Structure formats: structure tokens, C-alpha cells
Length: 285
Ligand code: PMP
Image (cartoon, rainbow, N blue to C red; front, top):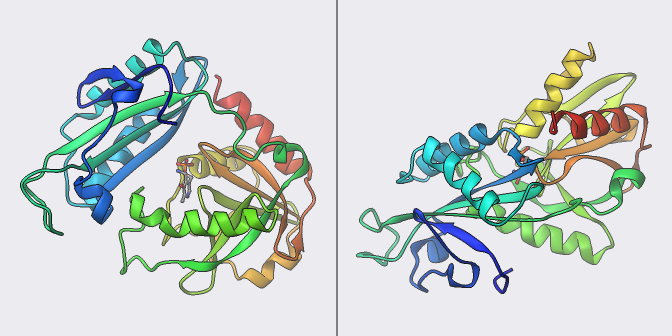
């Protein structure tokens, strides 16, 4: 992704895509002091744009740094990136991090904080899984306890096990991996939340040790609008045996039906399809 035409917004300026670089002694690269957002623009408008910018501020605060741009400034910068690159339907990536500076140890309060925003065209996250249902592997790693790490921040450090889990899943022919949490409950995929259907009611893990995704919150609202009961609760992996339908939610994933998780199988059923299609409509309203 580094060798492309276009412009990236970095610390208040639009610069050439290929010039959007950092120094090797960037604190974030050594100690994971980096937070980010993944957003999608539809018809030129970013869905839940302000919520994403606010979450970026929240995540930075969780990592003990402040982004030197306000939510309003981030909003303007994101629009500028879309416009200057001629994008209407795009994925938007905002990233904030502690840079190189006075300190090169774990403590780095004096180092400057940077913000960059890039955008590019990005189609379906799981390829043709929206029709057929995605196949998931079960990760050997667990989502950690909220006493271990700031689990509600969208922070780079939380993605280390996502990358390795997704690599392992892809090596087995799966499109993603599902994590259990530190207690053994079903948690989330590497970049998406999960929902199950049984007897016309929906069950989704309580987001008490992972990201309560904006898409997850939107979908919970959509289900409640349809008078469908949503149980946000702890779910044991063995319960997957009895679930009929399953889908993932995330900004990149949107609403993607799941056909298989390990040895458990699910139908790409009516509700999964309905919510997936309704979400596609909603984001363009
Ligand atoms: N969990 C993880 C680990 C993620 O990376 C994402 C994507 N941001 C989500 C859940 C879903 O969050 P959202 O719906 O806000 O994109």
C-alpha cells in the first residue's frame, strides 16, 4: 500500500502518498503506542463519522496520549482526504501514534503525537462470503481480561494476536478466526463482532473485554426496531451447536453471514440476509 498515487493527510497537511513516512525510532513501532479507526464512506459520506473520530480520541486517552487535533478538525481532514483523492465509496483509515523525539524508552511523554488519515477503495472484506457464508477457524489465542490491557481502545497492540490468528485461519482455508475470551466465552473475530440466531431470537456476546463495535451497536438497534429479541450475554462455545444462523459485523466486514466455525455449521438464513441487506441500505441513507 505504500507505492501508490494520491494524497495522505499527515499532521495537518496533505502530502504525496509515497512521502507519508515515519522515522525508524518512532515510539509506536517499538512499544505499540498507536490507535486507529477503520471507517467507510458511502456516496461521499462516512457512516458514523463523528463516532469514529470520538472513539479515536477515546482510544488515545486510554493509551495516555492526546491527539493534537479536535474531533471537528479530524472530521474536516477526513472529508478533505476523500475529496482530494476523488473518492466517494472508500475505506478511511485514521491513525494516531507517539512519534520519535526526546525519549527512546518505554516512557515517552515528551515525544510528539502524530495523526494521519488515508483513504482508498476497498470492496467486500470477506470476498463472496456475503452470499455463501464465511468460514471461521477458532483461534488458539484468547481475548484478554480488561485488567490486562485497555480492551475497549482500538489500539494496535490488541491486533498482534489478530494477525497471527488470521494467518493461521487462512492457512486452513478459512476467511477469519474467532476468539474465545480469557474466561472461555465466545468473544469476537479479528476485526468484527459476532451474532447468532436461535428460534427467531438473537444472541451476541457481551462486549465486556473487546470492542463494542459501532456496527454491532447499529445492528442491535436494527434488530430491536424489528421487535426481535436480542440477548447480549456470555456465550459458551458449545452453544454454537444449537445456533441456526450466524453473522459478523464490522465497518470493513459490514454484515457478513457465517457458514461455519470450526466444526459448527450455520445456514445463511433469512435473518442474516435481511440484516445484511438492510445494513447496506442504511449506510447509504
Ligand atoms: N472488533 C475488532 C477487533 C475490530 O477491529 C473491529 C473493527 N473496528 C470491530 C470489532 C468492529 O467494530 P466497528 O463495527 O466499530 O467497525
